[in-house]
Length: 501
Ligand code: GLN
Image (tube, rainbow, N blue to C red):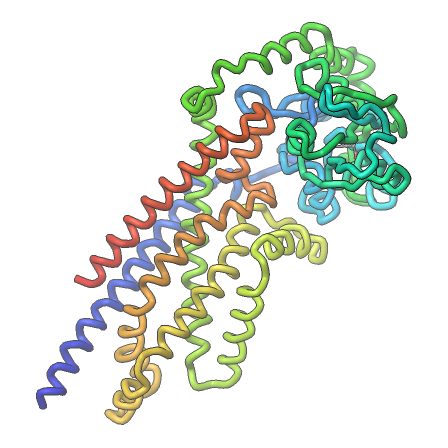
C-alpha cells in the first residue's frame, strides 16, 4: 500500500516533467516557424531572374572586401555592370575559389567570376565567356629571405592555393626543384605563411601579386610571369547558356562604351593604388576596440546568423533525435535496426564531410539547388540528431527494467507504459546531455562556414581577408563565441531548474 502511494506520487512528478519538456519544445518550435516566416521572407519570395554568382574572398584587385566589408574589385564591378546592361540581378556568394568551382559543378550557383584562368583542362567541365583580363604566374617571397630563384627552393616548403592554376604550376615543377607544397584555401592565408617564414615562397597570379606589391602586401616577386592565360566568367558546361550569352553580350557593350576601361582604371590606376596603400598602412585603427567599432554591424550579422542556425538546428535535431531514440527502444527489430543504422552513420561522419556532401554532392545528383542555410540545418539535424538519438535511447534503456515490467504487469500497454512510467524517468537523466548537445551545436555551426553560410566564423574569415588582423580578430571572435555559449548555458540551466521544480 505504502509503496503504491509513493510510486504514484513519483509518477505524477515525472509526468509533470515530461509535460513541461514538451511544452518547452512546442514553444521553441512555434518561435522557429514564426521567425522563419517573418525573418526570411526574401528567401521565400526570391523571384525572377536573379543569378547566383560565386566568387573568391581575397583576390584583389579582382575581388576583395572594402572597409565596409562590401565586395568590390574588377570582377565585382564587371558582373554588376553586365547585369545592369543586360537587365538581370546577381547575388554574390563569396565562398572562396575552390568552393566556387565545386558549387558551379554541383549546380548550387549559376556561375563564377573570380579571376579564373581559362585552361583546356577546365574547358572539359566549364563553359567560359570571352576573356576579360590576362595574367601569368609568378613566384613571391618574403623580402630579404635570400630566396630569389626556383633553384633556391630545394628542400623547402612552398605555399599554394587549392585548385588554382598557380598550384598546378607549382605541382608540375616541384619534383624538378625539390620542394614540398602546403595548401591553403585563400590567398591571404597563403601569403601569411610566406610572411611568417613557414613557407619559402608562393606561386600566384602576376596580376594579383603585382597589385599586392604596389599596395603594401609585403611580398616580393622574384620570377618573370609564366603560363600566361586569360580570365573568364564561367558556368557549368552545358548549363546556364543564356547567362553566358548575356555576359558576353554585356561585356562587349561595356568594352565599347568605355565602362570596361573605367573599371580597370578604378582599381589599377595610380590614384587607386595610392589610396589602397594608404588604407593598408593606416594601422592605427587596428586596436581591439577599433576593430570592434569598424566591424560591429558585420559581426552582429554573423552573430545573428549563428544564433539563428543554432536555434533552428537544435529544434530539428531534437525532434529527429527523439524519434530516432524512441525507434531504438520499441520492441520491433526493424525500428531498432533503423535507429542503430542512422545513429551509426550520422554520428560516424565528420560534420564537414556531411555538410559538403549535402551542399555540393546531393545537388549534383538531383539537379536541384539546396540553399546553404537549409543545407546547414539538414547537416546539424542529422549529425546532432544522431547524438541526441543515442542518448535518448541510452537514457530510456538505463531506466530500471523492472519499471517497464511492473507497469506492463499492471496491465498498461507498451506505449502507455513507456509514456507514463519509463520516459519521464529517462528524460530526467537526459537533461544534462541535452544541454551539452545544444552547446556543441552552437560550436558546430562554425564548421558550416565551409559551405559559405555567413555565420560568425565565415564573417571573421572575410574581415581578416581584408584587414589581415588575424590575431586580434580571432581573439574577438573567440570571446563572442564564449559569450554566446555562456548565455546558452544559463538559459539551459534555467529551463532545467524550472523543469525540476
Ligand atoms: N587565376 C587562377 C586560377 O584560375 C587563380 C584564381 C583565384 O585564385 N581566384 O586558378
